[in-house]
Image (tube, rainbow, N blue to C red):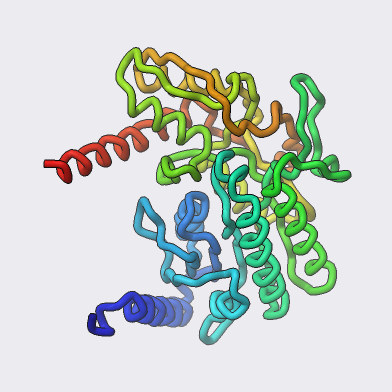
Length: 357
């Protein structure tokens, strides 16, 4: 293959195009701020870029892979492996200036099945990303740094327990290694904030869902998995659900999540901050909601599988204090999500059918 047709050539062209756009817009005063989004090939990262662009930012996107489900809205997309220190430095380096904000969402993660089957990969890969990226960002004088954590840092809860605040995560007892790594990386970020002048903001995400996210392959979260299973069967069909269906979760729509991330980044809130919808439902209630939106009668077969903690109940007082409120509750969120997943299922079936014929 000629070099100019290679992936390396495409990256070089994309990089220089982004630098030229940045320089021209800076001269015109066209961009208010410059931001880096790490994990830009993922679900939340892709939507966050769209939010930042609406706010007038120049955005550099970085990931080990491109976005699977939509073209990136970033001004520049660079394929880099943030487990490598030199790639973190490359991501943070910008010609003729400095990034104003870094949003660190890159991680090796997925749904409950992946979290329980890939403990070593999660601990190794995500820790390397966060150690190198936090260190380099502080060393290079990045003014503001966002780290995406998770409510997986909290212990198991029983139904009816009072809300847990952010401070209740310690003494710590997460039920999986994903939570332990997130807790460690929070501490890394806060330690660098104390030593350097970098302002750190940390969000603990509750389950996030919406269109343009992973919906198959083992890394999908529960809402996408249930939407896929319902889409794959006809009216009156049966789907399998891990556990007995009684586990309770809160599901936060992506529109609310990116709004919370942006508001938190611009705020003076220090330390970890929970971001999540206060509507708690069981897994069986999630299935019922998806079935109603799909217009199908669905039977559930409960099977053994990783479930995680039995219940969640967290305080949102800190994020509420800066004016954030969830606007999309479960029914509306599934109405926004299910048609997209259904379209992916049908498109895959059509491709498979064409391949056979």
